[in-house]
Length: 417
Ligand SMILES: Cc1ncc(COP(=O)(O)O)c(C=O)c1O
Image 1: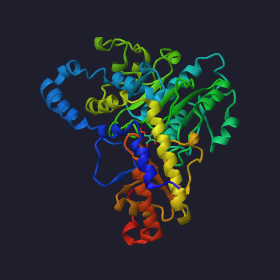
Image 2: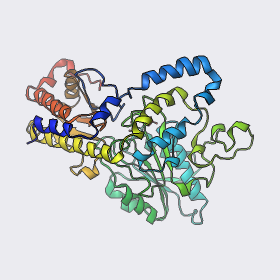
Image 3: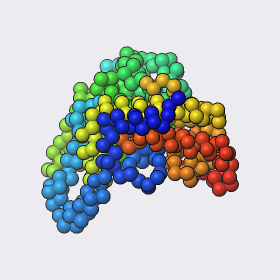
């Protein structure tokens, strides 16, 4: 049995304990498990935003492009966050949102496939239609606008991937971690299987980046995107991270050419020529204010060893799974995420009696989680900010709600979380 003393001991021995102070704690007494949605705010963000508004915009105006180096923020941020993606610094950039980057990289990968000797045969994009909606919509949109050139091949469970991988596949696009169950694909083995049939792979790492290892370089992943406002704490609406493996860069134009992704961007040339590397993924003017706060997060991550962060996540995830099993299984709570940590992403999903109303009752008791139909409660485990004692406390509060059937109260029946 895991005790409160065990949780305290785990926190006391934590080499990353000081990292919590790099983030704003939020409402006192509230336990946040929604880092899988919006991560904690870096402590330096308010001052940095004030400076961006009051000095750079109000006073420096256009000159701030140079004085505050607004222009190169996408590369600086990408480089600082790249270690958390297991990627070389030059191969990652912060741009647009996850959806747009998925579009750009899927289209780029297809363009490469279309220009290769066996291109006639390669028509299919393998993906999960029941995955996160935006991933599915990107594939469906690209197919729809391709004039019949590309076609979908759907898989409905990981077991179906092997059968879908044939020599007519041009691209495989998958979410590294499922947003509901937290199932994590084995990135290296899956990428290797796709490569074996001559396909390339685009990973959406939104629910893994900043929580669990994302071995982009080691797995020889071709393309990847990661949402930054979840575990990476870059701020609501922050740009996403985009990665292109080095040897796949500079082979063709990006799918959305724009003036700031031009090789000679300040000389206003009419003929497009892509900038080198992932810089060509920049389309037009970047979100300067958003980048200012995103860079606060980037500075925090630049000082964190990824292995230490991942070890902490592993400890949190295994502790919560065990605590729930020991204390709430008899009340009907069941782990829906994989039992094997190697197959789990950033959050843990539990089937929980009461579902949405239980999630509401947790919220009233100061425990912030998220609900997914029909009865799934997700605990996002942001490794930089969640403590083991908070897991203990959250499980006690859930236990009380379930054993007293408090979730049945009428005020919890309208679900907001
Ligand atoms: C798997 C996945 N991809 C992408 C996104 C978000 O995409 P965007 O940044 O375009 O809103 C989310 C958001 O929750 C997600 O869970």
